[in-house]
Image 1 (tube, rainbow, N blue to C red):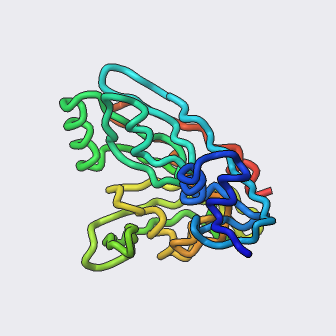
Image 2: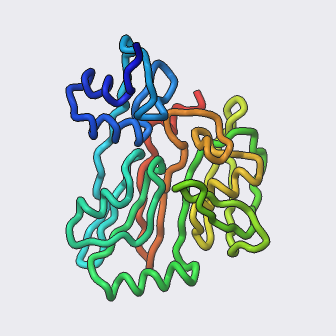
Amino acid sequence: MKEKAYKLLSAQEGISNSEAKSLIDRGLVYVGNSKVMIARGEISPKTSFIVQKVEKVRPIFENDDLIVVDKPAFVNSDEIERQFKGSQLLHRLDRETSGVLMLVKNEEFRLKAISEFKKDEVYKEYVAWVDGIVSEPFIIDQPLITEKVGNKAYTKVSKKGKPAITEVTPLIVSGKKTKVQLIIHHGRTHQIRAHLKYAGFPIVGDESYGGRPSKRVMLHARKVILMGRNFEAQEPKVFDHFGN
């Protein structure tokens, strides 16, 4: 007789049912190399789970206006906002995207920073591993539109969309994968993910946008320059060794 995955995980790890559901929903639970996708899915009682650990949030910079952190993968941006009382997210990173995340401490600075974003005066650099061989730099200049699919946002190229530009530069080619640097302009929802799918180079681990399965979406926000200040988050170790 089969059992619900979250109940088995709860018993195995000695945690509550709600904690077990959360771990599965975050994409942190595996059976062998396969991610457990549905918390309420039924599974053999003999199943042994592997739970991937989440890194801690690492502060990068703080002053009277701003808090900058290195967000680990599998943590929602909203959770970090709650962790730093009295702060407000200036922008967001998707749950499985790691890297530079900024929170503001006062309204005056928030309005100044938002103005910089709107004028495309903020430098935003990412690094990703993608499927396929990227042999030379190129630019994706395609408008994007975001729609709700179920309860999730999904972005695609559309003539009805808003302007969006992504600069792509290859860094390392390994097998049939390429590590790329990405510089984005405008910063639309899921911009990098949608643009790279459109270009035929989906991000490894980004199954929603056509990427091959992996233990995480291989996208990291490496650098942001805001009003003359440079903030950098070191690449996770998996990015260094992923191509080996």
